[in-house]
Length: 436
Image (cartoon, rainbow, N blue to C red; front, side, top):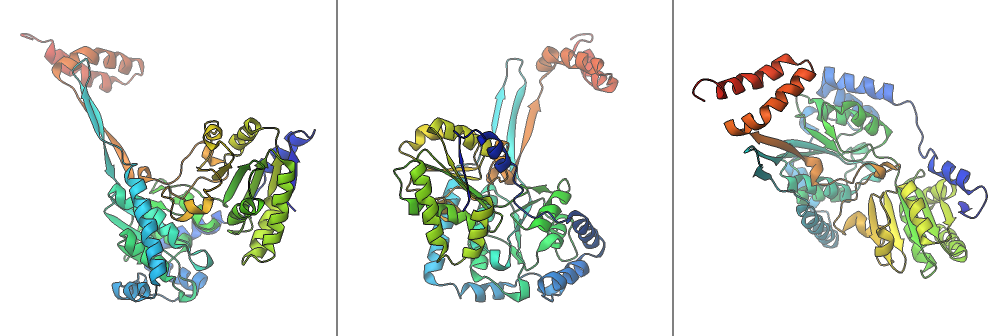
């Protein structure tokens, strides 16, 4: 059973603080290992990537076989059933339409001084998308990473997807094709991140790396940040459900398990105003765990990190939710709009009992790459904004420089940056010279 808390208990604050501070993943000392891998790839390029792939993924490659050929992709895509293909295409269509609306507009205007100011948005030139392989090989992750990049206008888009023992998920390759990916490499781990960041003879470097991975991938992304951009450092998945008593306990139990089944470090929390409903959900979870395919993983997650919290009212629920800052937040209440208005920190909000989080993982439209470990307090989920950058534009006329230049000169002098001030003064002197 997970822990059960009530805001009316004397020890609630200490227990809730402990819940927030739970360390939900093993933290082996991977950084030193990753540093060596990155250095090896930088020094030996393809040879290091090939050797490490053989060691960790038991797959022997050559420079010529690191990427799937068009013929291999075609053959694997042909294995996908019509039903699965239709589902992927529907998901892609909805994800593309949603992210197209996120594209910002360029702007330009002339202010009162006569200066022309503005900004314009341009995409990164190349992006590398990391897609976990093996048991955690998800075609939905390809769609969620690649489609925003293509909508943003990224010119070159590549995927690194490990294929342990040479096992390929044809749905991943079909998702890459549907999304417009240019090349799929069958490599993974820290060595793939290093190759994407620094390049090898076979793999061209990219400007930004996105996508989730294990502790070694996360550490590698952290280390290459600055050389390339990254989206975020993703931790274990999590869900918070706020539900009143007018819900089906089995529905809520399944929603909680939908994240618990990801891995043993995932976290599922229920906040409810109804103690009896909380108990009913707990029973429903236990019943579902008897038959769930990934019951060992889900049971460990629920037992070690799950929680049911009983609150006095929804205002209290919103306060606790904002402290948790969950990756996924379901509002299964009579008036989800009113409750959502009180939420300031959440990666994604799912409104009402008919909107399970699983819809967001696949076909809802919004991105499912979301901030974890309470980072929704200061960051957002993946979007087209991760693949574009803003360039500011300024143009002075002589009149504009005459109006605002003296202030720039004064500020430069106050900072003891003489050349800064002189570069403005030289132009002002020309404007104020004889005959001006």
